[in-house]
Image 1: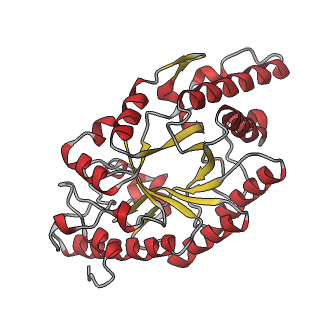
Image 2: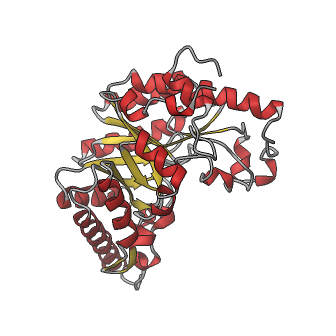
Length: 349
């Protein structure tokens, strides 16, 4: 492996193509190894959790901005831009948003809508000028073909209108910030088709959407470069921007059932074994081919990995507890073969 110190800064390597982002909260971003990686390689930072609605929205009109403010101050002090993530996500919508008497559904829906719009207005206003974009609505697309929209509380109450309410409120609060709809499995043609139906509806209704975020939580064998190309092209055809928002490449080729039935997940890999080394090689090749795809598309303006180093990754505990190594830097904050594969076409993993 080449000398770690000789690795080019990714933000410089891809300058003129797209921003290089990493996701973290303040504690992780300030760890010595992770901080050095972040400051050298990234010019974009996504708050992993502290800018979501549950941490910020304590109750109606009561907000805990301090953790997010600390992270943004850190980013600003180091010349790093911030992606806002995420205003509306069914998994982090505080229960108080839905409190109330449902006897009169017209009045109840008006109350919840007002709470949503007030929350978004207050949060986007608070961070105005401090973030360059927002993931306004996260994971609104249904996974299976039985419908277009996720069957969330938001959708059950308002249908697709909740998306319109959220985007219009965000745009009114900050006319300059870019607004994204974000989702996973956009490389799957079926799910992407449903997402594109949602996006086209937004465009037709005059909803102020600037781009689509592709989470890109993937594995060493899936998706193919062609599948990612198709996802980017479909967004380009709508005249929108592409962001890669949460990329990591799991070393495990788990079956789809793993996420609902953990017992079907693959057994943990052991570092130093042949299977582990083979998986790392495949990971490097996957990162190489997909970063080449991103670089070939002018519509891709930001590429973010969901974490900084393998020491702190959500995949160490999800979908099961086992070590995973899905990022570009190892647990000691050294560049992995995946990093070298991206920046050096002659490098052999």
